[in-house]
Image 1 (cartoon, rainbow, N blue to C red):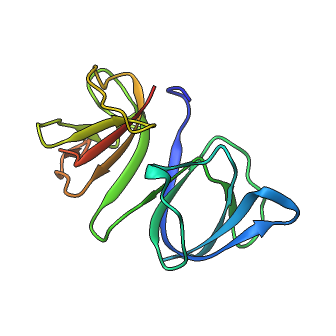
Image 2: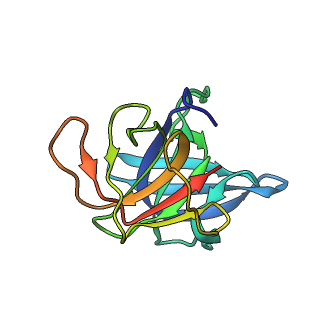
Image 3: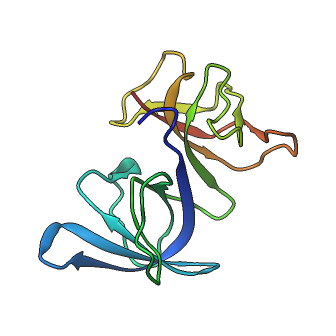
Amino acid sequence: MHSSTYYTGIVGIIERISPLNTQCCNQMLTLRTLNGTVNFILSPGTYVADNTPLRNGMRVTAFYDANLPVPLIYPPQYQAAFIGRTEPGENIKVSYFNKDLVSAENSLKLHIDSNTRITTANGQQFACSLGNNLLMVYYSATTRSVPPQTTPDRIIVFC
């Protein structure tokens, strides 16, 4: 997980979660999105925010490493790296943020205030500088600037 890794998020409603063949520790998560169906492989290495038990009907954002090869099949199938439950109007971004808190793809700049909840991936308080880290950012409104700016509700830091 470093600055040359780009994560792409897909928002959808969980339609189905099923075992992946005989691999009991892997599952297939089927999402219904605005553009159709997308499958994600959930492995023991997939980070699920807050260890939330995933279930049918839940709205989530699933992220995959955009640099990894994917099979050319329909529906598309990706290896899930991160998954977070989202409420309507809530967005999640997973990216490496530089010292100025701008995402690696220059698509979001963060402004932190006293209401922003900041924890590590295992739920502990994080009191150091956020810059130069991989972050999972929960936010709602952004400015129309380039890059868009936001004051996140919550940040999970992957040290």
